[in-house]
Amino acid sequence: MQTLLPEGWAPPIGYANGIKVATGGHTIYVAGQVGWNTDQVFESEDLVAQFEQALKNVLAVLATGGGGAHHICRMTVYCCDKPGYLKARKALGRIWRDLMGDHYPAMSMIFVSDLLDHPGKVELEATAVIPAG
Image 1: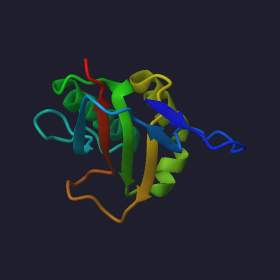
Image 2: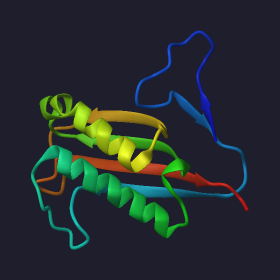
Image 3: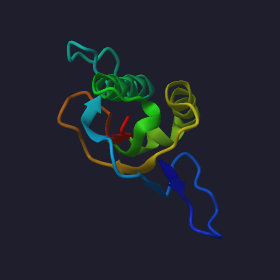
Image 4: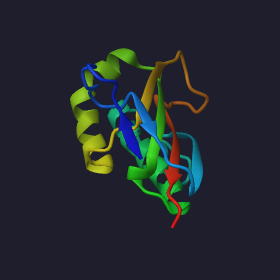
């Protein structure tokens, strides 16, 4: 996997503009994961706690397919609390580094009016590529 940064562009903070993946291996598409536990119960209505659990859920699905955080090449974040997200960026960054290290895939952040699973505040979906061999 190679991070793509066009010449002369300032490096993005917290994401990659693009990721190049060599052929071979297999791709895992992780459906939107919300911040509930393994019994599909929200233990918190706090955005930060839900983000952490949702990211752990993404990584658990990925691990089931033989992948890890460093295999994620694309992630989309849906959030229905923009003021809460902006206020919590420092805490969310800490959670990211704890679970993802310094790996930043190509990402999109989309603010929505609501999520299907109430009282969900954030949903993460991901695409990962596991190299052959």
